[in-house]
Length: 143
Image 1 (cartoon, rainbow, N blue to C red):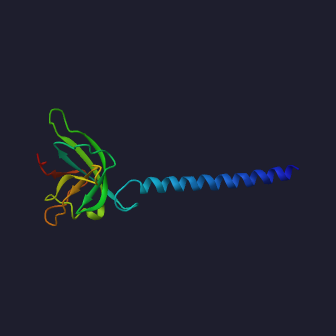
Image 2 (image 1 turned 90 degrees about the vertical axis):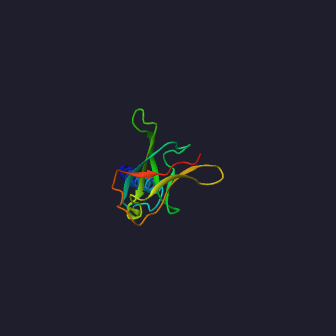
Image 3 (image 1 turned 180 degrees about the vertical axis):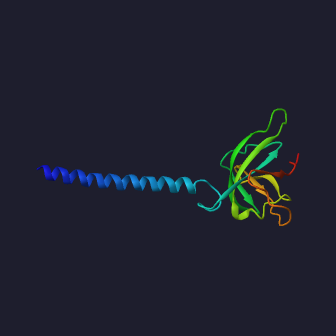
């Protein structure tokens, strides 16, 4: 009788290990894919922009370069005391680094009829690529 109890616990242990491993893999896949924008496991870098008004933009909003979703907004916060500007931090795929240059501009865009916000970055082939953590010019908003 002791052998059947031992065999039963070994079987239960194996099932438990398989279930935990499966949950870990599923959670990792959801978090990496849910990171938004672009490829799930591609290397990324940070770019920042200073804007006058972000009009409802929030963390997790998509970032598009030339209309292609390539990243997400990671943080939206006030820039320095008394500046009146809002700093938007974006995480982009490294594969677009040569398209996001000092000549590119960030503007607010809309995702659809509901008015969800996104950041649109103009693609530019001339100029120096914006470095990791560097600032991108923001286009002036229309009144």
